[in-house]
Image (cartoon, rainbow, N blue to C red):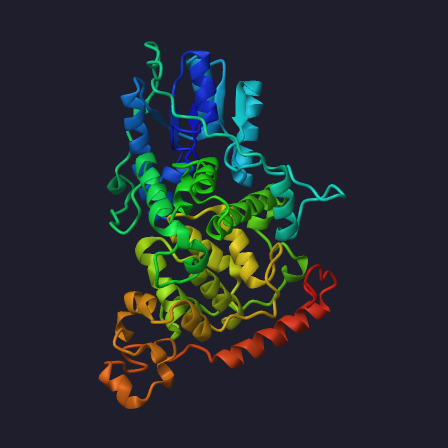
Amino acid sequence: MWFRGKDLRLSDHEPLRDAVESGEVIPLFVLDPYFFAPERACELPHRMQFLLESLQSLAESLLQRGSRLILVAGRSVEVIPRLVVAWRADRVVAHRWVEPFGRERDRRIHEAIGDRLQLYEGETLLPPGTLRTATGKPYAVFSQFARAFRRLAVMVDPVPAPPSLPPIPDDITAHLTRVPELTELGLRHNAAILRGGERAANDRLQRFVRETAPDYAEQRDRMDLAGTSRLSIDLKFGTLSVRHVWTKIERSLGETQAAQTFLNELVWREFAYSTLWDRPELLDRPFKPAFAAFPWLRDDSAWNAWVEGNTGYPIVDASARQLLHEGFVHNRARIISASFLTKHLLIDFRRGETHYMKYLADGDWANNDMGWQWSAGCGCDAQPYFRIFNPVTQGQRFDPNGDYVRRWVPELSHLPARFIHRPWEAPDDLRRAAGVQLGQSYPHPIVEHHFARERFLALAGQHLKATPSRRGITKKR
């Protein structure tokens, strides 16, 4: 049983269930240097902390059931074929990955061991590539995908965790190791990161259903409220299965608007995974070919201001600082921040996408890419390129009292709500009373909104008009 970092649980785990029914089982995790070399681990500090905690939790759960987690260091494409021979394994069972580098890894391992590698679905509710239009093509519009999903998807009960597991065979030998410590990978513990592991994940789900889910439809966009589930990290690492989450919400909330709104977010996740499955090149280039040669700016000063949270736009700066501090950004803040980087600052969405993947504890390749390309206007079923979020009005609408900004941009915390999203418009005496000195304690806006909006519209309009391939860029959605 090859656990691979996106299925770190025992419940609703079909490869594990089938392995247990077959007899002897060796639970294995490979510490592949692709992720676990110190220089690589430092490129995903928050995800690595959650991953290590989840591995430790998995190891303890296996031990409680009479087995143990075997950890082996090395490249998966070399370790798996070697251990299959050394352990005389008849099968290697695992969940399928959607990402192109995971698919290439599996192709190479299958080439080495043949059909002994057996991959199971379970990362999504429907196998990616299942849904097709009437002409047999992948869906490019979410609403159409969602309708097809609702027609075809049949939810079955999650598979319970096995009450016991067979002991590890006595003759298993390998160069075994333990779950690494963060410090061994050159990282420090961050107390702001959510706790890893299946038990913590189930606690989050129960708390969401009990406390937050009933108001999800009304509060999910409010950045100042704890109105979201925070389950994205558990779906990313598989400490909860998406089927488990779906059935729990459906049974707990029934046909309410809250339930349907939340479940629609899970369908969006399906859409993102399905899109990446059919178009693996999207991690490198935009969905819409017209944006392939878009004249993005290389403005390192503006880039650093955006990364560090010093753009002079409080809602954008709050999201930047939240990301660096706790490896999470509220989804509405992600959209605002991505729109600002690409359309106000004219910086390539791929730089923002890479930055988010470095620091997001819930960093998911398919979802992150879908979100960034959607915000930039170049993705699958993206918002139109000419829709440009105003960070001031967005802040006023979704952080009306300024509490989100006050938490992450404390130098503005004494400004009244009516000015906290536009401190440059506050009267001088009010700013002085609040201890705000523009250009000193807090920066002036890095760019004026109206100017930035018109600049992007002119540049994008000129570029797209001159680009032969204009799929999906007209103003008619």
